[in-house]
Length: 84
Length: 250
Image (cartoon, rainbow over all chains, first blue to last red; front, side, top):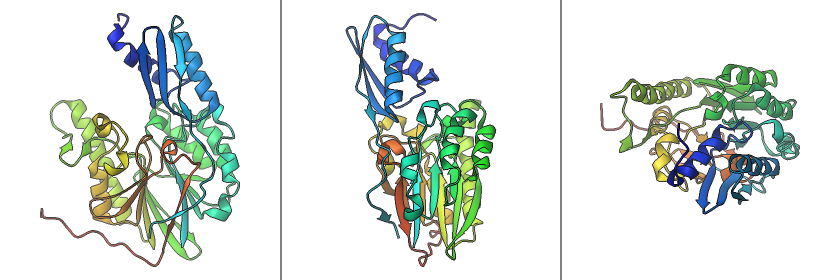
């Protein structure tokens, strides 16, 4: 299979990140501008955010990786909701 | 009053240790039951769910779960289920469980569910075998959900799903992927059987609140959507929801 054309590169990166067991995250948005890859979405932990950056750099060593993903809070809820 | 803590899409893996545990410490004081709405793992590995099982082991309230699509990825879903069950988590797939809490019988019917889309834009089991298999899977699971809910003898009935039964809790997701996020067949099953509450996950960018076409409350508890370790819902056991009236097609 040939290398993806530039027009298809963001989706190719997204697929690689989904299928890499170190990431396996379907919740990422990928944009590519010039030699910069921008990642956005929600992640469960700071460790996962760091791993995503590392794997993206491995995949695209010639690109700058800008990881703007958000680490989601796992704090207790302040209140409860009555649904009766 | 029954207090239900619920969350989905925890996506546990080797690096997830202790993410949830601090928030579970006060759970006994805040909830009577913990429900997990699938996608408990990242890639469906038993070793991944073992990290979560260790945090759930010994919780002083009952825990009931369904699996999600990620939990099937390694094709080791039976092992994932066994790891959870070893930690005293009840796992449902087309099945129901009833739990007595302070004299109130709480029934939970659970399924992963599947996709297909929503009213006016749902796939049909027509054409290629792959398309028949896709929609047929949703139909089979929806039928099992309806039977499991109908068979529950309980004061309160809850449907626990991974995929969404309605569009309202998907708002925020891209419209193009709705058919991969849920199916109206799940809502129809719940409306036919009757329930007090429907919980689902899967929609990380979705909204929290909605209702089935017959008016049953639906809550999306995907952890990235609720942005807490879990949400808590209280239900009044004195109110009994009956199956919705039959529609126009006989």
